[in-house]
Each structure stands twice: as C-alpha cells, then as structure tokens.
Image (cartoon, rainbow, N blue to C red; front, side, top):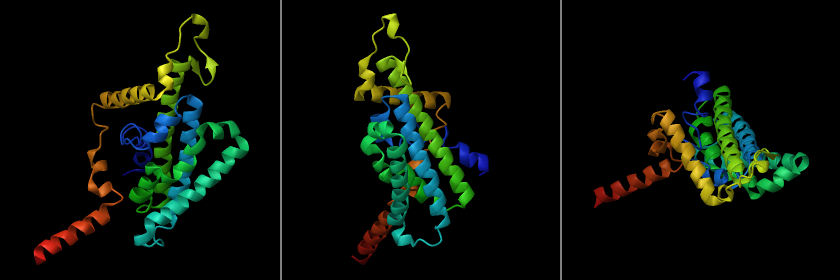
Length: 229
C-alpha cells in the first residue's frame, strides 16, 4: 500500500464514521453545530495522530499480553493534554463538548487503529494512517453538525442564514431523532456514490476484533476438552 493510499483511505473508503460505523456516540451527541463537530473531530485527530506515532515507536517494546492497557495509557496521556489545552484556550468549546473529550480515551476508533495498524507498522505509515482517519472523522462530524445546525437552527457556524425569511427551523434536527436521520442519510449517500464499494466487510471480521486472540484461545480450549472427552 502506497503512502497516499494509507493516508486517503480514512477519508472516504474506510471513513471511521460513515463506513466502519465507529465512534457513533460522540458523532450523534456533539454534532448539534458545525463548530462542535469540528472541535470534537480535531481533538480526536490530534490524539489519534500522536497516539499512533508513540505506539508505533514502542511497538517492539510493549509486551503483547499487556498491549491494550499500554495503549490506553498512551491515549489517556494525549487526551489529558488536549483537554487542558481546550480548557485554557477554548473554554466555551470545552464546556460544549463536556464529557465527550475525556471519553476519547475509550474511543474505539483510536484504540482500533492502535491495535490494527500502529502496533504493526512504521512511524511514517502510522502517522499517515492516524492523520487520514482523524481527517475523515473530522469531516464527517463537521458536515453532520453543519447540516443539523442549518436545518435545526437556521444558522451555519453561528451565522443566521434564513432567520429573516419567515422559515421556521425544524427543531427536531437538534434532537436525537434528527441526528439519527442525518447520520443515516450520510451513510446512504456514501454507499450510493461509491456504489457499495465503500463497505469493507473484512473490517468486521474476527481478524479486526480486539478480542480475537482471547476468543481463539477460548475456542481452542473448548476443542481440546471435547477431544479429551
């Protein structure tokens, strides 16, 4: 895989939100405005990029049996840095995103890329993977937030769009049902324009699961017991 493919796959082909359907909780919760969506996306991108680099550097040092706890410690360190930076320089955005910033620690996108890519590839490739996946996440959240804000509040990035036209915004788009509707439409659009090629079923196979090793070990144990019986 070329460097460009490593970077670009996360934007559309393997978009973590619209194709792999990861990180749905913050996607639906914080995208009531474009600013919130972009803020959450950029925060996640920063953590993902830094965590991928560090985990790639340490991949030959971290013991296999404790790799997941080690990954979480690395991710938590960068989440703390991002959270302090938001509190210091963007307190309004930090208040708007609330609990979802510290919850980046357990975001399956970041932990999944650490396990599936950064722990198995070099620093440059891991950085490109983190940058591409983070950019795809940011674009998806920003677009979803913009659509919901425009339809639900009649604004775009806080700027009034059709307040003087007499059109009443559909407030439902600021609520959970509207979020699910926009999310579903965006997923359908990606699959339509890619003619279904964006769906990568292999990403949902056992090989991509963080618990694959333990499941295989359990299965092997069961087969051994049956053989003994």
